[in-house]
Image (cartoon, rainbow, N blue to C red; front, top):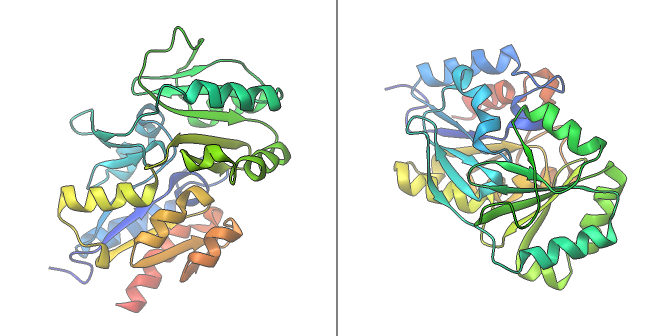
Length: 269
């Protein structure tokens, strides 16, 4: 039994656990070891698909299954399978086509349980593939196997902001979850899916208490997760929407934000 026995930390990856050079800060790894040595458990919640998360698993070795695809799925890396997943309805194609028509500058991808398929390409889409390091395919609506999980629109950050503002209060937002998951990325997926709902489900699956759970992130797709956890944390360079919901503000991701959260928790408990 240790000081952190029964406590769980759930961390976002991009902009939180990893630096702007897309590496896990050594301070984070050291602090996670300290957290575990004193009884704590650690896992991840990300917008990435499992293939893109795999590169971090050997270093992090999450204690519980990982929340992926912005809460659309929970994936067990030990069993190499989804434990739970939410998919899109058939008419999601119509929504995607309207957004593509209104924003021809976007690179667009469909994600299913197996892979990521790009309907068209641009510089931001190529950057996404480079950063996340996943294999991909070019495809079409007809060639991408259903069910689909989410659509990702990739464009310059100023266009992402415009898309978010145009669609967040649209009729489509009543049916689909629409979020900015990073400066160049706008996504939509099942309305019931978010990292917070997935965290609740994960706590039920694994038997840990949300009253002893901390969550940390940097963007608006982390909002429900941070609100769901008892200890609500955001990096100092987080989206203002998320920072307003957080009780704990850490250093930026380039300075070891997860480590800062752990040591702040150490002082609180």
